[in-house]
Amino acid sequence: MDFALLLVLAVAVTGLVWLLDILWLRRVRQARVAVAGTDTQAGGSEGALKQRASVKEPWYVDYSRSFFPVLLIVLVLRSFVVEPFQIPSGSMRPTLKIGDFILVNKFTYGLRLPVINTKVVALNEPERGDVMVFRFPQDPAVNFIKRVIGLPGDRIRYQGKQLYVNGEPVPKELLEENPEAAPTEFLLRELLDQRTHEIYNNPRDPGPQMREIEVPPGHYFVMGDNRDHSNDSRYWGFVPEENIVGKAFAVWMHWDGGLPSFMSVRGIE
Image (cartoon, rainbow, N blue to C red; front, side, top):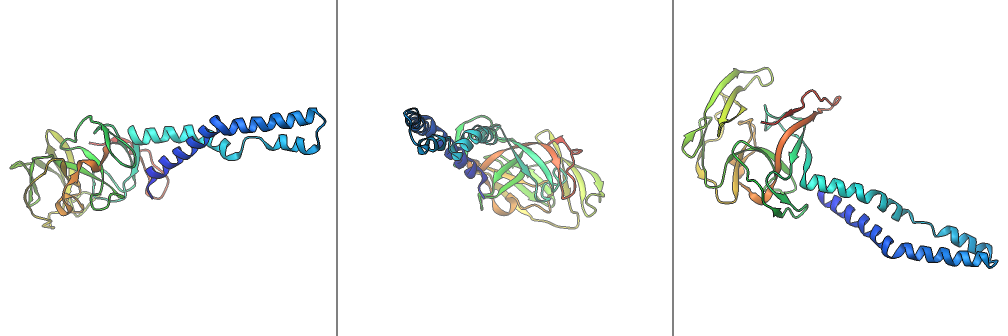
């Protein structure tokens, strides 16, 4: 279900009904009331009284006038300011856990029109290390979240659990072997463009070996922080610029089926 499309349609329908009421329907009702009032003053029948009572505002006009401002505000906020998402998989562990509810900044990378996703105002471009939400290139109806590793023109290689950007190995250090949250993994801290984040690597899994590739213009190379359990650019290629949704910047709630928890509220590094 394309929620953005449904929201745009709801705003369009309720706004059109309200506008028609202001320009035409209201005048028709007022004219009927005036006619019914004249008939009553002239000693008209009981039918005239019923006609006067029947020309009240229709339910669809009342609903449209009530819901249109609310729907319009939601559309503007969701399309141009911030949009909530839920994390459905563990591909971004340990940074993001299954059940985390995140907020995505919709204007960091420029303003885009809803549904058609056309950029109308250019602002910033994605940077290495950003946690980015995008529409999956192989199925644009599905939203993915990964970390930006390669920018247009970058040369990326991944071999022996080591990430290389433009021929240089990305520094990393071991923090913990077999942590309680992931007993089969090593927890490491990675330094990408002077920005640190934590990743998981499974030392017993050789993982994919990727020869050096160059990121084409207008595209980005992304990877999950859970390096051996992530469906990312190593398997299906690059993210086109037009598929970008926004930059994830905060976790505001965690819910894994029990009671919602707000103990994990934090910024996303």
